[in-house]
Length: 117
Image 1 (cartoon, helix red, strand yellow):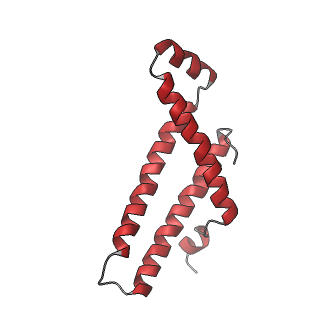
Image 2 (image 1 turned 30 degrees about the horizontal axis):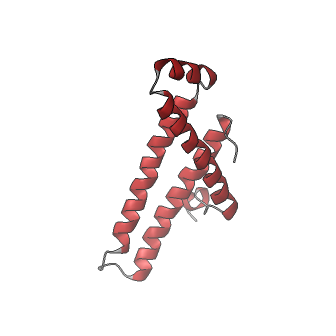
């Protein structure tokens, strides 16, 4: 086994549930920050009570874009006729491992911000 295979173990069902829980909590923060931005006084009050939310939202948006880019690449691989089913499966597995590693790292990062699955 290579180092990549050892480090990028598949995300488990529990991890998938954890990711869904974390994602839901952060998406609520995204909505809260957007809503607070509509009124300067409300925004100042919100940020004084939730000083890390801007960082959490920015990190989430950046990593969501990365996960979405991987998903787009996976969709492109699925329609390439020149690849055999086995080749597609191998490439898709590598992309899935990459996504799962990102999600695991994000779960741990957000846990440090106090967001528990």
